[in-house]
Length: 216
Image 1 (cartoon, rainbow, N blue to C red):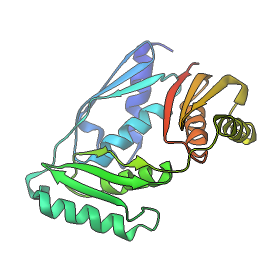
Image 2: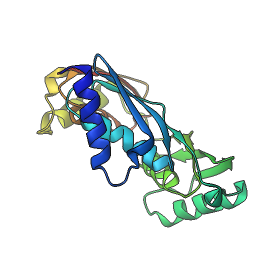
Image 3: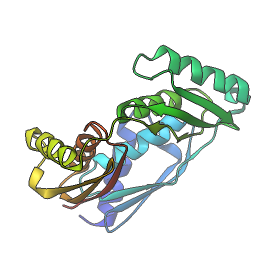
């Protein structure tokens, strides 16, 4: 697929998504690497636009340079924004009470601890959906138990083998002190995300180094 065709396909995917205002988004492609430029009205739209681009066949990676510009009537002071984020986190049963948040000029920083990566992800997702947020910096630390490297590697490889979407042989797994390193090549972003999710799901994993490439 040519870069021009890829640009058209990504642009059409952005238009197709009713959650994204694509009118001010410019798409460029260079050998499968797609860059998004322009402005959107919320941080969630920025995240959604990147996910839309990753779904398109032929996209190897996405450089998301979209800027979030909040309308004046939607701007909020730091204390009000922090309060809304904390309230939303508290109401979500997945987010542990050990996660805190602070806000500065629309930037929300999440701090504290969690036991699982899905709890960190949930906190970031909740914060990203709050009106007035322009960016989320996730500094939540994972504090789960650290099993042996062999146990981690084995459990991740078994999870990959059980996954109907993923060719487990295409991804190698290394583990050391709670840090998992993935390497290999997969045929789609869906496969890439499944591999990373399998790594994060292993007990005791505190960091995943993602070196998995998407190739068509």
